[in-house]
Image (cartoon, rainbow, N blue to C red; front, side, top):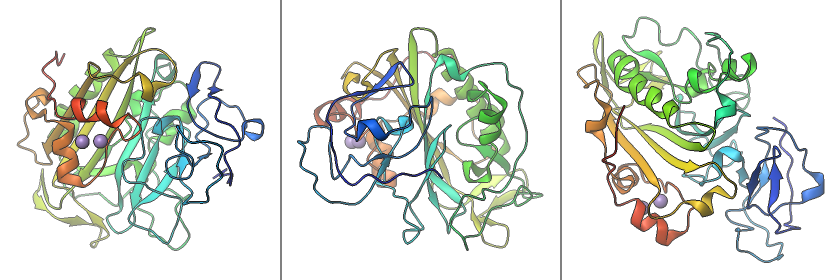
Length: 315
Ligand code: MN
Ligand code: MN
C-alpha cells in the first residue's frame, strides 16, 4: 500500500484531484502524486487538520483520506494493525473498514461517477486480500462454499468497469459479506442497478454500505458463522446513497435538500425484492451501528438530512 505519512498540514488550499475533483483537504500539496482515483493517504484531516483548521500542525492520530471518504470516515478507521476490528484498507477503487475477527468489512465507501462505468467485463476473480496485515486470516475464495450464502460484494462489480483492473479489485474477499442469495441477487441487485441510473454526465453519487449483527438465513437455512467460525454472517445489511450534481468540494455541497437514500435490510432469503420498502433514516442506521455517517458534512446539515426517510423513485 503506497501509504505516505505526512505529519503536518502545510496548506489549506483545495487541490485538484484527477483534474476535475477538488477535495477540501489540507495537505502538503507539492508532494502528492496526482493520479486519477489514487486512494493514497491524504493525511489526516479529521483530527489533526480539520478542513476549517489553521496551519497549526497539531500532532494527532493519523487518519487517511481518499476520494472515497470525501463525506467522512464513519468509524474513524485507521491503518493501524493494533486496532484489528476497525482497520482502514485503502484501494484505488474503494475504501473500507475491516473487522479481522468477523472476516468482513464493517463498511465500504466509494465514489461513483460516469467515468467509473465503462466496457470492462466482469472478472469473477474472487481471491484472498493479501494486503491485510501479516498474520491475519485471509478469507479465501472458497470460504463461503456450500454455506448457502453468496459472496456478496459491497462495492459492486458493475460499479467498477472502467478497466479490468478496477473490476478485478472488487473481487477481493475483503470486499465481501456472506449475503443471503435473494438479498444479493434481487434486493441488492435492484438497488445497485437503480443507483447506476442516477449516475450521468451531470450527476455523481457516494455510496456507503455495511453490515452488522450476527446470524442470517441463506438458502440452507440459518447460520451465524462460516469457515469454522472465522467469518460472521451479518444479520442486517445497510446502504446509504448520496446524490449530487457533478461538481467539486463535494462534502460542502451536500445540503438539507440533497437526496440521501438509506436502507437497512434483513440478511434473509425471505427478503423482498423491493428495496424501497426497507428505507430508513440515516440516523436509524447510526443508532443501530454506532457509526457517524456523512461526518464530513457540516453537522447542521447532517442533523436535517439524517432524520429524513427517502420517498423518491426506486426504479
Ligand atoms: Mn445523525
Ligand atoms: Mn452522521
